[in-house]
Length: 227
Image: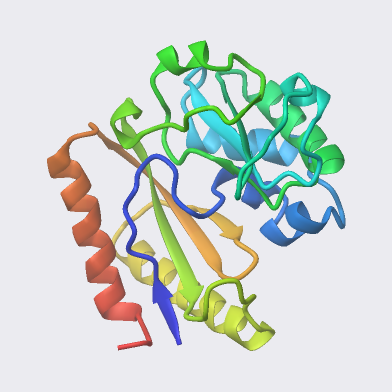
């Protein structure tokens, strides 16, 4: 069974967005091929207007103390290191070093640009245990994430057959939306499923968040196979 994830946190969805496009989630977790910095820069450029601010974070780094976060201890049940960037190339290069040297479980970016004031927390660097971006700190809603994901118990990776089903759903959604005149999305392999990221341009208001929820629910009603 495959579904569209209808979670609508516009700031920090529980799925990698830009960087998973440049190096799939599986590659980023096991370091098999490493991260392509040019591809990551292109993905970030798709997600964010030039010079806009966004959060980059690593969850569960295997190296708890590292020079990238001033050798502070990244502790807790689920250690997190995060920082805010407006230079997309610097963010991509730092993410590649983070991936290669600290080996986090995942590297994530906010789906939408954040308030530039958040640079005051960690300006073009990483910090251990820093407060994450909140939805209210998004300056706009620029991206709509569609996450085709196999239904499975938490902590269990999807089988190849399940990933194939997710890919088929993603292609069906793409064809349907293209037929309605939607633009081409950024496409990503999330490791367990498929992502489609569509460009939008909305103010960060409760009304527009409700609109996004409605779109996700309508697509889920049409394409989910787990009813």
